[in-house]
Image (tube, rainbow, N blue to C red; front, side, top):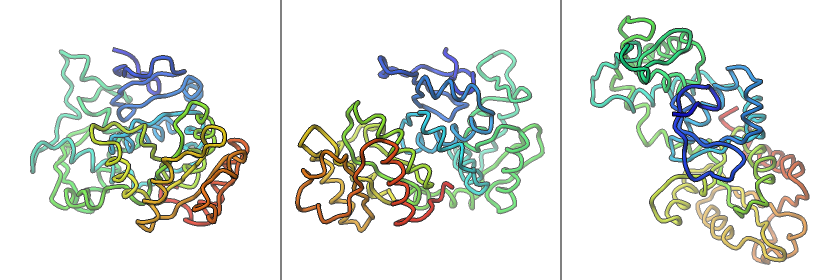
Length: 326
């Protein structure tokens, strides 16, 4: 058993990230599976719990669509300037409760029940809580027990759950209205996701993390890179599904010298066919090699990650406005 690099709670190491400057784990308290760079980990060690909660909330929302987020210093900087909305937190808490309910009408009463025979069921957050409580805090973006209770009260007031007094965490039953609120038709995240089509080469790590990702998050949207999503389906099917789910698409054509990224044309064209906004970007040394069929579109030409970040952020805000995550 390893420790969560965000909270220091129990976590399982994830294979497949060997050789990377960081660690990948599956942590219930942090919201699921994620990779975090060494510099981002050090950054969080000097941060308060409210920022850790924001990072965990981000991890939850990625894992919800089977995506493993990569937490960089750029991710943390972008999240630090955001404010978690109470409504969003209550909705995601409700999604967790629906996920944990094995059948209609089940009373979820184990969050406060501590099994003294097993250390695995302990979760320390000012007191000992039962199994699943770690996820309860992660999915609600909470640090204190009072926050969870407050959000549960909100859900009860609108008829989504029924609570029975059993402190520190009440017994919870998800009501019919609660199931309807988080039905698939209303929970696909299409208003908050931005699909990123680009070259997945190591040379593009900084332009993505410090440029594209930071700009997208700062504008209030969540970036989706298909290479960071877990799936067992055909990659083309996954690409099509995620573009359909996205609010807009960022298409960067940077690639090898004199050779713009060919596959990005397919993704950009599909998004255009769906009527979704496409923001075109390309490193300045390759812009003359972009195909003539797409040159009429207003490309963001960039020289370094900082310039890409600033120009992309301005374009997103001008075309789409502030996103729902801010």
